[in-house]
Length: 279
Image 1 (tube, rainbow, N blue to C red):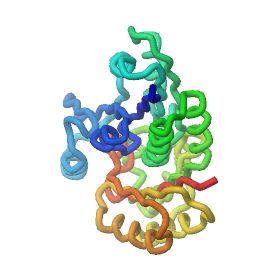
Image 2: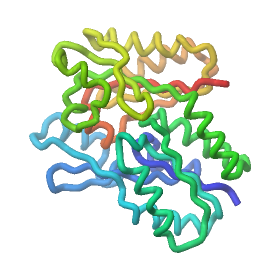
Image 3: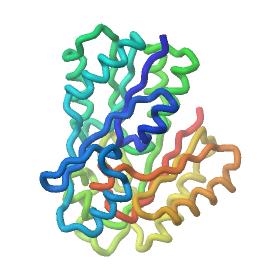
């Protein structure tokens, strides 16, 4: 039986993409006051970012409950005897713990392993996609677990933020706390390191930020796959992706929109790149 892969919506793999590749994508929840929406299920990215930038209610997020994972485990147990779950960083969300707790709640017998990616967005998503491909080629759970851990060590994600305001409000600012004093005058480049948000550098303009992302990617000698994402800057992200395609014509570059749950913390006008480094 083929190992089934589960990830969450912060991977920026849509449910439709997941269905094509045999990946189950479990949505987190976005809250506008008392209004709850499942990430990319009951609220679209367009509607979310419109409300984020024009509304007067600051959104919050919450992880899926263990019961959601247990239901998915039971459903997939009819199709396989092995499941691999890849979650966003456990230091940024309780999603990992929900996935682990659900193992004991599941009613049907199936081996489940949960891996904390220590990542977010396509830093997590590219690895989940690679795992799904390996599963379809016949890799079993133990082999896939080793494969994913190795791939995560080669996954590098950095983001240009227009402002730190949303990260600060959402309580996810991590090691970038030291940048808060100049929050209004800088454009930070941030990454995830050891599961937490870490500062990389600070710049003065969006153009400088995009140039930094390009130079960061081109600093790698061997690249297996790339991703370019944005929150509300599709044209800028497209230009960056095209520029990278010219530089790396043989590398697949995925384009995606940052999920609403991550958009709560990233805010508008953010652009991210992920490098899955080749061995």
